Length: 436
Image (cartoon, rainbow, N blue to C red; front, side):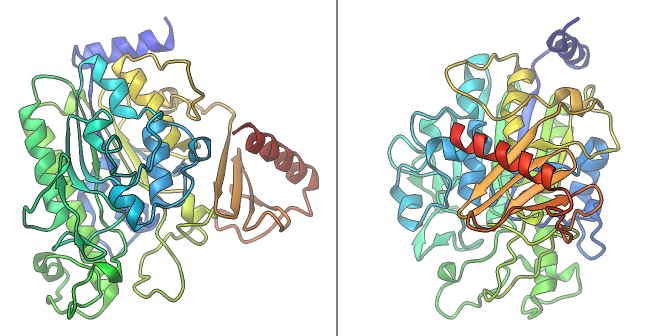
């Protein structure tokens, strides 16, 4: 029996139908910000439970250490260098630019022909010009914001309103995290008679931008009072660490409501759930409010150190993924397109190269195929292969080499001790860079 037919028979035994696909991304969450990743201060019971019901990933990499490029790599299954979107969209591009080239196909366009209802509720950040909007790229429904960040309560971005339903402005009041969770629950209820693909890109816990704050409003982590109260704080809590804990707990509660609705609808056994952070928490000096943690990884977002690209992630897939285990095998957000296509019985067209590998065998408990992952953002470049990590902050600098099996904090450069390894990987990186 082939791997594809084995998977199909497993799914048939569980549900007799293609699985629903719930893809949840959280925004700039630190690798060490959840209880299941060792955090003792932040309460994240629902995400912790999700990890315990499936597999918690400790070797999962996003496609880029910044929001726009990482989301593009997720939805296309292709490195953003291939289509010249290896950067963060500016304000004008977010509001009315093309962003992701129209020639690029994205996840819902592969799943719709297989009978899937599709929706996106949350952060888009890939361009909102005509032809670039979610409902014009394969999503049946969209409710969310165009930009890379917005005020959680007023829904403003750089001083203008930024909440949309379809292609029209929407003025539904409320905390954005709750609004997106509400939309997800309602969509699943409406579409329960057919398989669905729900992309739920929460804008939390993204760093709150000063430009999204109204005159007289404090620049601080934004969260409803009830979650501050859960930590013994008042709405005026000045300690930004305490406010951030409440932000993550509010996000966790919203995710918990969505998962509870899956349970109440009786579809948990035929729903594939993936949750991960789009990139690591930012650790940029001088901005203020840097209270997150990527512990034990080095640095954070916008860099190709581990803290920028290795992220918290988990997969629940009853009947396919055994519950309660931890997988350290290397996987990537690029792998999600082939994963979902395989689960839906969709054959990816051969008209373009893809950068992912179907991780189903690994998720079932097998070993990952030998592979390399490549990263580039601004001047930062990196490569991961096996236990080795090659990295340099600038092409004009020498490559650094780290053994992540012993040094996941990237503290001891081994390039001089293992020159052949460093040289071989550097040559491989050069060949990859030329190919894309």
